[in-house]
Image (cartoon, rainbow, N blue to C red; front, side):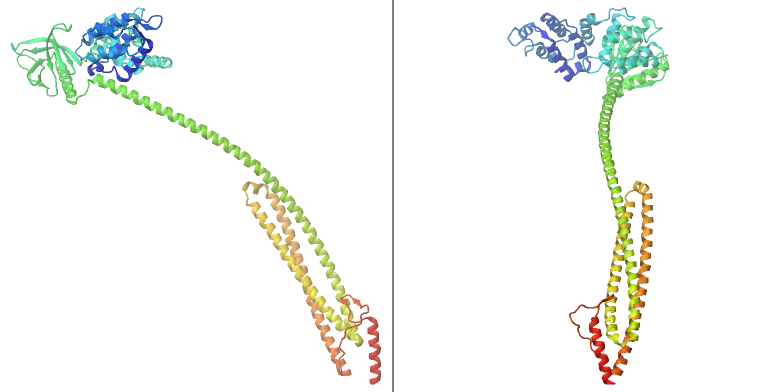
Length: 610
């Protein structure tokens, strides 16, 4: 029975989602899932892509040993029994790891030993064969630091920001200056190829000496050890100081190591002979003491059960230790993690925030790009609409010009027609003038000849009819003038509307408007001329009317004379049905034969009366 690549993939996904299900919080907090990941990825696969059963047994036994979990070989054999369900079934390695190992972890295991076991499984296979400036022990510490600083996703990598943080810590520990410009060039080259470095690439980077030029191997090793103690072993401060005994009250030099909740003191800095611990909690306090018993730079650590008097080497060391211990106590009171872990969490949150902002910016950029594309489409649509509108405007302009030409032609025709009407009116006026002269001549003939009294009366009747005709003619002329004026006003209104259509058309039609205005002025002049002619015709009509009144008065005078001499007035009777005499003013009242007969009768009566 063996485990496949698919089963390993499922295991890694579950690790990424839940951080090794059912493992104690201390196990998760120590980031041991990364070491387990390295151990699993270091297992050898056969040609079919599966891990052999023997490797799984060895790994399970080693995990149980370092995690202080009782190993049950019978359960392992029973779990991996041969059946028909295959190696990726519920009888695979993943259920066994969760049920028989990870669920039983209590957190009381040696984390350094666990790291050593995982390192032993994966280092030989993945560690670079090229010579490095650091030892295998230093490479192991860099590997553990990588697991602490790596991102919580698989495959594990360390991002450039954490690489810069680690290299700065190493540079400070070595007492050298940080080469920011050199790292910026390295960061640019790294970002163009990938997101970060694997554990083995980080070991190669530190071991290559690229960022520790001029430093010997021992200095680099001491810097790695100092950073390892701070980040992994949670060593906040360490150093030699004198401690006062509780029983013999003597002062002894000890190596003190300050951690987040404890101060351990050893005989020497090799940490082999531990002499005791000072348990720290929120109730502890640290205070400076005055010099006494020949000891200087004293301070006391007060706990619930006892107090510890300590002497530092100088005032600076004393102040540093008091401040470090007080900071640790304050963190315990607030329930906060160690500063380096809190700083790592803040850096991680900052990266997540920047990533979220970057994703939001990309989303906004995509939205802007989409909006821009939509805007471009809208602009293209508007451009097409404008082109269509321009085509329609050109067509309308063409129609307008055609209409204008037609109007001009119609206007020319109307002017010609008006001219012809005026000529006809002139002819009629001339004819009327000639008829008026004939009428005056006839009136004079009636004054000389009494016999033509009836003709004069008929001429009077005809004159009245002509007066009515002239009045109707005058009315018709007035109506035509009013219609012409309305039409000219309509053309003028159309011209004003055409001018007000657009400013662009106004510029283009300015010349045409001037032509129309000139034509309109000519028409107005012609209208004024017609008005003058109408006034002249009216004056002539008044003159004719006065002459008719004079003729009527003369006729009345003749009637009175006839009545005085003859004593009667002959009534005008209807004539015969013979052809009537046609005069310029219409049909006469009597024919020539009737007039001659009446003249003879009148002469006979006159002779008899004499």
